[in-house]
Length: 401
Image (cartoon, rainbow, N blue to C red):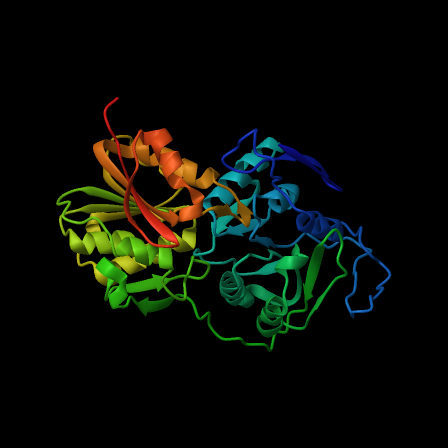
């Protein structure tokens, strides 16, 4: 747990799921910079650096109106501003749960903040729009398009991110969709973005979601239509790891319960459903756009949508133990830009708990990640199904112990 000190007080903040051994903070220098700006603690002189960037500030931002916080990684911004009853808009189940815990720890009532997802209807009016710049430019594009109708000429729009996260393309999106845009000086490797809403600007509708058809090299997925909402992993084309697992996808499982864990756009589970029409499917991802993508992908390719459920959650925490026959998994090895094996370990542990005796976990991953070591520790076995110079497909079976 780390403490963030602000003009509103000091806050003990954690990520989710909470792990006392986790050395990573639940807030960044970009969050702290934005909070200082809102409190009027930055600049104040209008001074401009040699690059034409201005460190604006000097007076607090009026937060008495409708405040929306977009992309808050672990709820630091939302928690600090909870007294102003903000709406948090997030693409992440983990971020939502972290925010709920942090808001409660700070002593606020559960209804002090409204938490909406990036696929929910946006607020009808926003007076202060705060944007934590996401890793995905597509997600930023989609959210700015969706929120632009709620912004008016008097709306204060401020973005924040680390210097390495803010590019010319980032500023171009704010400029094209919101209005004239400029950036601050860099402080502690963080930067602010200031946009002035232009009521006459009409950037049109969001270009998301998008679709593509899987080619003949996609194994069991060949010919399927993949639907991708903004921010989903490899939304422009099928990633090579998933393609490799599709080429070796286990089929002929009959009336099995199959889980597509970390489903992304859902092509693994959808391919399994098409190959085994009697199977029931559960698609799970911590990303709300991913779950929406999987649902749309399944409906675009499978005739019977009643045999599938779609869950936004933390690995398999919401799936009853001993109810699954097959888990398909292409685990991520990073969470909000932090590289970590913790997510894969939670997925593998959850899979073992969810599987029936004799049930199988099939995993695809980069060779260098050594997932076979984790699987042997958890399952007592790990078999290489297929491999190439970059990827390996592994199979672990849950045995009675």
